[in-house]
Length: 194
Image (cartoon, rainbow, N blue to C red; front, side, top):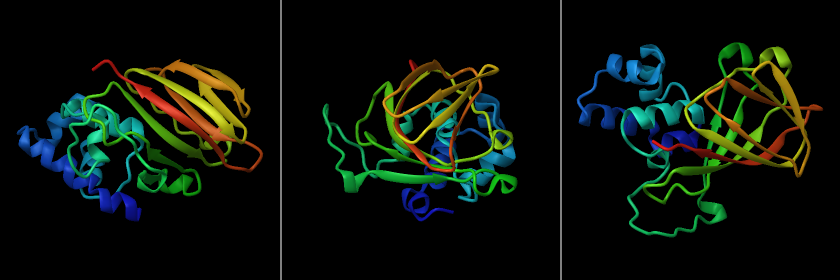
């Protein structure tokens, strides 16, 4: 488990919210579409959840995804997150894809009650067959500023180069992979009306 994930206490925060709402793991699983086993692993910090999973959990527990990245509540209407204050999380895929993870850094986690959630994301190179597809309600925007990235979406592959941007309905399963054996980096903004 990543040191930053431990410091953020993601599992503890999720379990605390679940218990505060008097939900069982089965009820949260029903609300999120995630398995009870995965939710238990997340709560016990055995698994670092991807953004899409955190987004589902946040909605089920009636909080904004930024709740998991901040250490204290902020009442500010405008917030600055300094470079050294970003919350960095490494997402490692299942054992058969050990080298196929990505990192994301929450860029506005201190702002409460927001509909958009921006992240700095670093995509690892991987083979097409190693792709893991995710989906979640809402929309996403990506601006790629380093590397070359393949975006897989609804039976289609789109290649992005530095300076390219992408906007899509994130309820449709999608996946990313960096190309040419090098990492790619971009800004991803998740939007949800809920």
